[in-house]
Image 1 (cartoon, one colour):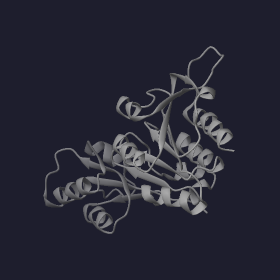
Image 2 (cartoon, helix red, strand yellow):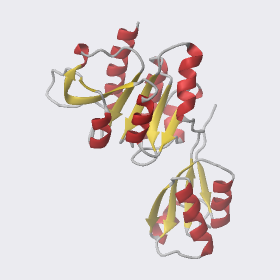
Image 3 (cartoon, helix red, strand yellow):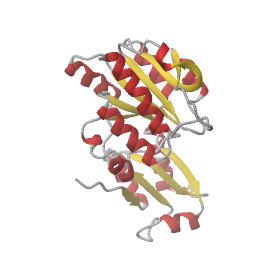
Image 4 (spheres, one colour):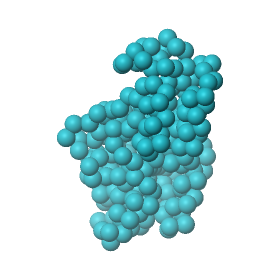
Length: 245
């Protein structure tokens, strides 16, 4: 199956997309636009926690496919998002303790797609990404996942730290990847667990890291100090798999 990213241009089209419930990943609005339709779009964006970027008209002209953007362009997801409750329901349906991936600061679509693919193969019940500081479910992500998006639900949340707190009430423990942590082989990673992965540059954000119960380090022998985010996710995920067997 092919995937298509939807670029929605024009004020009425963007308003209708919001009202129809289409998942809008990002919204670009021309600096200084303050008329009625634009204010309506801003209200809809706020209501839906949509990331808004204010850019120059020249930037919108470069992005536009139709040449008729009217000062606003929206990027809609190529794939539907799930709810966090759907991920827990998937675990219950299989009679398994929940195993979730939570991703912080993953802005490279190839990394996100590869991580979703790993999550599927490792038997995870879903992936959670934040609305900000994260790439959405673009066509590139879908292609890189090699079909895993058909089977592994992805939920998008406003606040990753708050989501961790809510999931702790469901009995989950959380481990994040950080080179200053405890070597992963020394940690008990069985039971209901959330694996938290950050970007190779910024890592997991401070507030999110503080919410985690454990910090896992991957032993490294080489001359550089970090793995690609999707590789780190794979290494840690399969230590969890090993312990769950």
